[in-house]
Length: 375
Image (cartoon, rainbow, N blue to C red):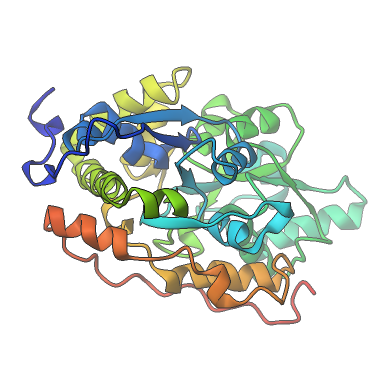
């Protein structure tokens, strides 16, 4: 362990008793799961006396169900997913507490080579109007319906992609087809021609580009700069029953985010992710996000970690408004109920231990879509 992988001295905290049950923590293999994987690999969980069992899941539905039904105590979740759990969408209801954000930005929209040719020459980021014009041309020729994949119905990917399509004048539910493909499978689905494009977290856009399967058109950070991405969510009953381990886990994640934003640690971070999450990928593909790229494309708003850690209900409210706009949340679910998972007590307790300053105010989300759009 080199100097840059030593746990920060301020992270030490009261160790939990020997009877502490192992914290069962789930994740989906994505670059923005790095705070969890780093916290385990460089001993941050150990330094706060936590026993943690990390469990990789290859789809969001499986991860959601394991958290909701008690097979996991905590998880790396999509930003809108706590809203879906609070509202009981798809018949799955659970009380979770968002302890920390894990990252900002980090997703790319990748389109097939054929669809890129249809669009014509463009510079990154591809404009919504140029993409819409290509879809209209295809429709005019009677070509096959374009299929774009998102990783889960209640995801930042779905709502940011929908927002971008609608800003270009397309109705995502009528002018093309949105399908769900787990993030680990999107690159192969694009390569095999099953889909025409996808919105997914890194490294999967870079992987698809490396395979020659498609071209990165834009990043979701081009739609909402520095938007919140994944969160660390704990089952609320665990957080209430085990307040010390819950705060300790949050402190370890904040410390990991701090470590990840130090460029001197990026080489080590890539090694950790390749070993724990992406053993079949090239190092350069994994490294792209840490270097502010998506394959060979420089990103204006790259993946970052530390500034994301404070969970902000006002940002989550934008996800909720999008979910309401597209008819995904029943009107009887109140805003207070849907946003109840976003609490800052755990973050503030953890930040006090670390002497972590509150991150700067987050950027404002995009303006809401007109109410009639897509209805």
